[in-house]
Image 1 (cartoon, rainbow over the protein chains, first blue to last red):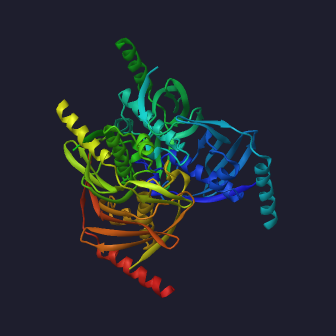
Image 2: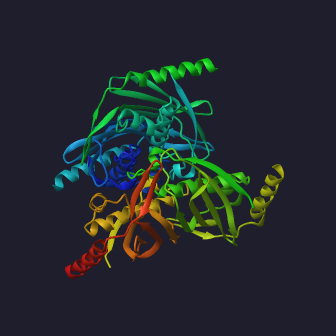
Image 3: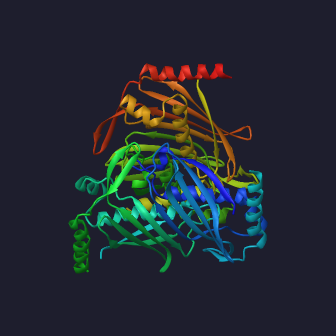
Length: 147
Length: 147
Length: 147
Length: 147
């Protein structure tokens, strides 16, 4: 299973008057980490959309746990991986570590969609190509060998 | 049960290159709606923090479902209410409606905390005063009578 | 000259650990107010883009002055108007008032652009149709008469 | 003159439905780069606030020019430096380069402030200690020697 690791520095503007990370920012961090995970698998988002003719991989569900508050200057180490592949959907699991402890955990369920209407925008899920799923397996193998 | 209703207009800057609301924005909407719910109960956040000597009501968990994409110019009607009161925590339930349909649903589990350390910031949960819980019941009663 | 007025409530998540509005949020407020000004002139952004075949009205310059800090719960009354029309560009002037005092002032110089390339995205300015400029004058006249 | 260099990757969530960076994000980038500049001078913001007993270094003015649009995946190299020291204020100059070209330029005028009131928050400017200004000179000297 391919795991992508990314360091995120908590910025001043990410924090609220209580001095801690304003919680929607954690979801911004994770959205960026999902994109980084795909890029690490050789599928940067622009290529992903173009190559597979999809409109995106929007969220249908998310679950999050926040265990430790973080503040300006903290460095979060985020580990991201695909937790599950479905036919037309998949789950991305993000673990945000701070100084070796789990600070937060976010699980995103996303759908592989094509656009069916423009005004208003409507999507429908499509089947995720097997080769996309394979890419995550092959990359991890290569990754493992490398070390 | 006190329900607060708030209209949120989706702004251009809330949307991503796919033309739909960038999902962390939904959590920003809901955080604002939680504050509005408390204000509706007579407890605007600055008063809440000062009167009860707490550091805040940070999140410990969230669960969200996204059913319909929204885009620039859409108006979301958000209904917010306390779904459950615990000893030192509570859950806020937000339903985001668009043109009469449920577009998203977010549940925030929050904790009533006092600050126990500054660098790094640490919190511990405290007991939610009964009068706070009552406020939400009394206000709803008043609200119901009014109609 | 058409002036659009909009009230903006400073949210908790708009503020930084110092307790005041994180300054990039003022630009978010003003971007939304520019869109509201066009909508007030009968040209909501989606219609504007579609009807005139433009890619947008991106910024080329901005100037801002911040006179008074604002904090959670403050209500800013923003007055927005076109300060100047050029051939292919225009300036929007925003005055953010708090309790009758000028809290901030932002001037955005924007360009009327068409897209000339996709990867990377490139724009070139186009001539702003006279009818667009007129719309802002006619609307203000109607507005003045109404009062 | 101490110059801090920082790479910023444009994220998906930084971009608007037009596919380019939503312009308030540039100010977020620059606020983070100002903090990084101070940190590079040996004055990370928490230390700065504590050591000199100030409430912050909020903006009083900004000027920006946007020359090239940026999009998801672009890497901006930001060069930040103090353009001018005043008695109680200073200017930070940020140059955002993309592939060797100037993409944007932002100048922030900030004030060295102490808090004089809490509700509402009020600040007054204080005199910037000479040693702070020196730090930026000494650091650059050390920096130059190092290379």
